[in-house]
Image 1 (tube, helix red, strand yellow):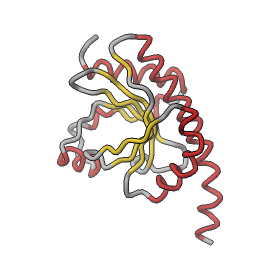
Image 2 (tube, helix red, strand yellow):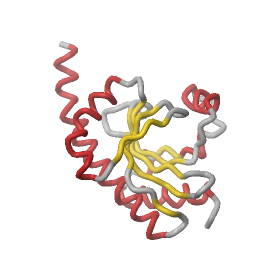
Image 3 (cartoon, rainbow, N blue to C red):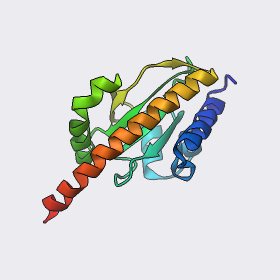
Image 4 (cartoon, helix red, strand yellow):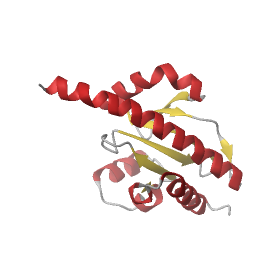
Length: 162
């Protein structure tokens, strides 16, 4: 399995099995020709669609999500949490996550083509089943961590609107 699309499918299947949220997974390759505004915007910027992501409960997907991105050239991948650079919800979420970011061995990265700020885990060589499992294990941990922080922010959002 050396095709990047096949790797994305294997990652999707592993994430679905680990999280039980297969129906919520956003499969980047399926959006590559989509006409939704976000996909059109990413294409116009030259971003690729070799990624698999899960939304955070209570947060719009394009504001922040957890996922795995596959490099189309090297077939290396990284898991992490991504937020839109312009997202206020995402900015507050990342501020809440910052104290524990190092404990999860996540580094900060700017993804200019996707207009995202990302907290990323270790890069893994694919296509090894152990690497796919490790990426998805880390993504699952980040998802749990981020959803806990996100849930804590939601009462603040309700208070801000009052």
